[in-house]
Image (cartoon, rainbow, N blue to C red; front, side, top):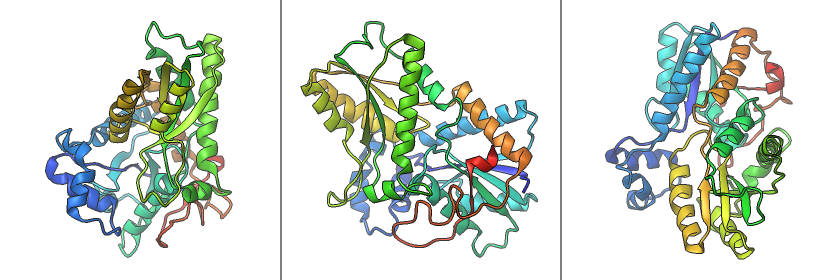
Length: 351
């Protein structure tokens, strides 16, 4: 199928104090959390005036992708649609249909497989289409952790952010990669054959470490840790937590930690709050210098690579995905209910 529009899928976030609780109600829908508890949970938003940086960051990525596609001669509508804040997915799809579009390629602002990072976006699209006679066909591009330019951009930003007096090669300097923790069960269910969430993060971390060695001659061991856990303590989530990891490496004699958030495309709330606030506080208590490197954001090499992937798919279209292909069937299954989904495209089909 050939496409005539692109939708960039975002998580969404509040853009004022009056939007914080409604936003969190949408995020936690069905869990029965009272509004007063949501206000407590949302304190980190209130400390920033109720504004999450993620929407502005995704608008910047949207503009950068439009420009990069235009440079490749691709002229078509590219719009942003969010899960939890305006512009909502159903509204954007209805608007595209009203403009006469019929085939839409969706691209999530998440590079890895998993329920929240991949399948739930397919559900957002599927629920928006279910019962709404829009006449749209929608496909979602699969995860892109191995996108040329992703790991390389992380390395470039890492090396460019190191203090001049930091000895990266020293035994007292630790290289630590971090990503969003998810329930163990969700990690095991990620990808067509399972366990892809962890495997793909480890792949990216290894590529960055190899790239560091190629550029500097420094062969640096690394750790993968996790952050932003939520949910009841009785449910096992991926560990170690970044703060626990900092305590462990400090006890082992580490004085400097280079903390690299590879699980996120931009410096949004979970990066700012969990790393720049909580992890920094933990490091300060331990007497450890923590250097947090930037996310890829709108770095030209990353945006160019993603635009190239999108342009290739737009030019070639894709066959109807089958049960063995990425982002299809029972992949990354919803832990709470069955919901309609749109097909997800195999990266192999794109290439």
